[in-house]
Amino acid sequence: MNESSPIQTRNRFVQFGSSPAGRAFLALLLMLLVGTLFNADGAFFKIGTHRDALRQASVYGILACGSTLVIITAGIDLAVGSVLALVAVCCSMMAIHWGWSGWLVVPVCLLVGCASGGLAGVVTARLRVQPFIATLALMVLARGAAKYASGGMKVSTAVKNASGGYDYVDVPALFRLVDTRILGGNLSVVTVIFLICLALAWLALSKHSWGRHLYAIGGNEEAARLSGVPVVWAKTLAYVASGMLSAVAGICQAAQEQQGDPEAGVGYELMAIAMVVIGGTSLMGGRGGMGLTLLGVLTIGYLDKILSINAVPEAGRLMLTGIIIVTAVLTQQRKRT
Image (tube, rainbow, N blue to C red):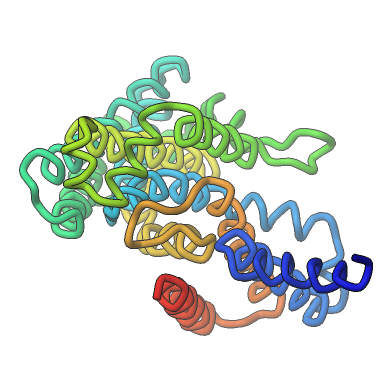
């Protein structure tokens, strides 16, 4: 019995390493190991580096939570970056130019995000348009709406007056609140918001019947429909949730930049999808979860930070991220066969 114990331990380790969670966890450990080797003269070992890595990854992480819900249904949401920009512009206009209270700004912004996601959901689930095409159209539509609402300019604290000049107003209290740090400056409020979104999405997936419906749809949509799953409602709600989380990310983006930029969020959808895929959620649908997405967010977040502190150009970061995405997808396909 004692002689077989090491073999059993090895088998458990092999099984864990071959599972999606195991691969995602090992990828994160590998990234941390790379950080210790290429530490930029000890910068990686400073608490500020890890704090900033989490803060920078949090907006992407919020988008990744919404993308996870959609990808589990075997769908895709390419519009999250554009919806983020639209909400950032709307949030800045209401909070800075119109002087609205945060208690009014936040619900209206969430409503804009839900409406955007609902539009994509209806086109996808009810009209049976391919998710790629539907969300691609919404991506263009939301980006155009952001530019139209802002006049193609950043909505900042410089407000144009009647004489043609500019008056500078104070940064709204909502922006100061979201952009602050707690626990002695070691934890960003944006990171707390990301963790709250992650926890709520995890509860919806693991504890609610809607989450089980999403997994069933991703596994086999026709079988789910024949089993009595409300496919149209469940899929539409997934896109609504993704749009709402994009709105949360848009509020955080506007607060961090203290302005609404209609060009914000370009490429964010790709980063969010990368985090979901590297975490182990299958692009084929039916498998995945928020715990895996958290591992993917940390992995990509640390990758970006390690490349940043080592002064790697942005072009190199993008190419390396692309290689990692392809590798993760190929690994998923090999495990399915």
